[in-house]
Image (cartoon, rainbow, N blue to C red):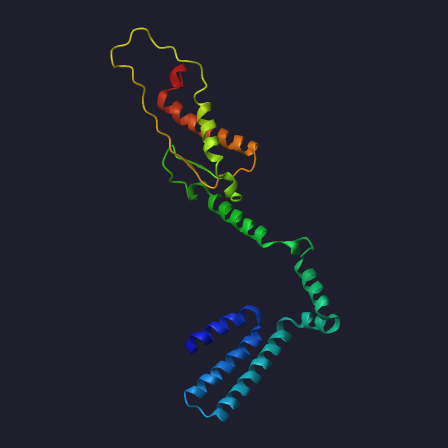
Length: 225
């Protein structure tokens, strides 16, 4: 349990402490472990002091090698000056720095979707069975879609039933008039709309995708509908 506590403490420290601070804390934990294993306290302390001195020296050398300009800016202008220097060197604008976690999440999700579909032959739904429809409009406000999706799909299906009545031949053999069965699988994923216009677009999209499947099965003459 003590070892587990030390590991958890190390991970928690790494979240908000600097790399040097984390190393110094780690040395203290190692010193305590040596003492528990029977090492003389004086020797353990001398070892820890030497390790801490080495850690501080290495950190200073690394700053001078790779962050000398930033260090000089901080010494002259303090933390605020360092912030302006880093922003200027990185090419960040004030608007860039106002990015929110929500915007970052939406951007990463959009980028992943674009990269997965940028090559059509390698897209995730490339092998989707014929007749199955994949509609992806957005990834936000899914809760607002509840209660409206069914209405939208119903509107789409009603569009397929609005054509003129079909003229039936007068002479028909008994039990011979039976229309073919057409099954179309509509798979709607991440389809989101926040207003009536968006719902209409969704309904039109579903109907437009179903119509070719029906036409293909029944033919393109006036009996198709």
